[in-house]
Length: 94
Image (cartoon, rainbow, N blue to C red; front, top):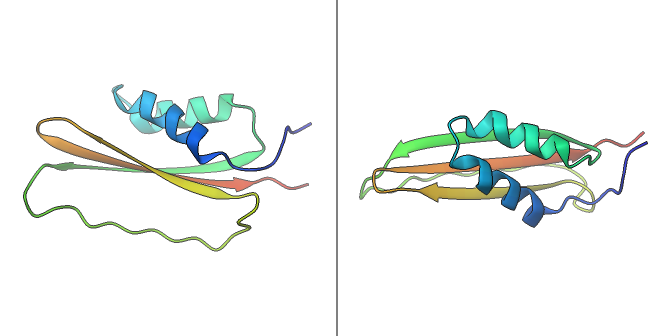
């Protein structure tokens, strides 16, 4: 019942990047990722911070199957703020 396995970070990146401009980046991102019809459980995080000269350090890590699972990070910004969205995709294997 599930299509191909193999997380496509570029595809997820494009989907989320389109949603970040909207009002509810997380909800829209999850909705659009699920509509791709892939056999994944998704975790999406978002940090919105005011732009400053001090920067914004961030890190993430995961222990998973590197063949089927994956992650991507999307950075969006305007004149006053930075938005960092992380997508984690864990393959559903039955």
